[in-house]
Amino acid sequence: MPPTPTTIAELLDRYDGLLLDAYGVLVDERGLLPGAAALFAELDRRAAPYAIVTNDASRSQATWAARFARHGIIVPAERIVTSGSLLPGYFRDRGLAGARTCVLGTEDSVAYVRAGGGVPIALARGMELDALAVCDDSGTPFVDGIALAFSAVVRAVHAGRTPALVLPNPDLIYPRGDAEYGFTAGAMALIIEAALARRFPGRLRFDHLGKPAPHLFAEARRRLGGVRVVMVGDQLETDIAGTHAAGIDAALLAGVSRWDPASGIAPRYLLATIEP
Ligand SMILES: [Mg+2]
Image (tube, rainbow, N blue to C red; front, side, top):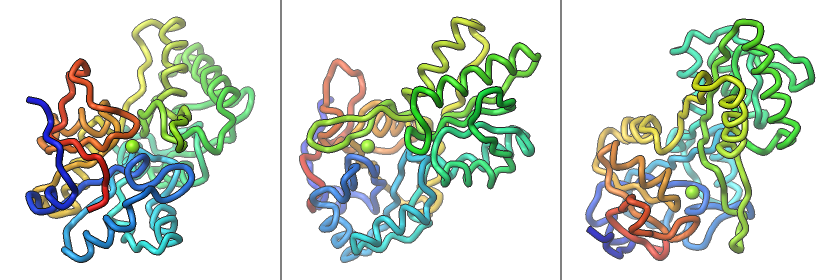
């Protein structure tokens, strides 16, 4: 069935609350996007439950809350569900306490790994690792970072170890504004994984934590007490694809993706704007 054009006001009439993607919906690299301030005002006016569900693993929930506060928007930190916030649970579940971990990303990315018991190591030639966390393109030199990380994984395998490879943010690209895009963590991991597949066929894959995997949606719903929500996102293959498996309806905001029937991914709704 083709998606139905709708508005934020209609969605708020039909559902109890919203799950909101961050990049390309509320913010881009330059700041708040048009309509975001009005959307938050409307959510407050209706006292509608919402959560921000982002694949970003470069900022803590507190850093995100501070970022919104600079624009005069008060978002409680617990309303912000980042893919990075799944890292501590991943490290605990995989028994990675004490694992020497190469973190490609920011200081907040490093803090997420540390919170799970991982021991972040300095990115350097000759480093020895037990785990690799590819969190973000910022905070790390892109090409040198993936080369150093790849080399360390190869050395570990040659030494008889199988390092854990974790990718909180599988996004390949992010919007920079004015129809410009940047490459981010998913693209970095893809390069590393492709090179490892040539060297060690079928042996080393990244564990994905963020959308479209169901973990973030499940965590956001849990925090909102299981109310009926609709996801608003701008990327078909992450924001929209993941909602089908999670049993959530989705609205695509035209942005990074435009709806294409050939994609095989059908949002229930299309939004032209987040202005309520
Ligand atoms: Mg987005």
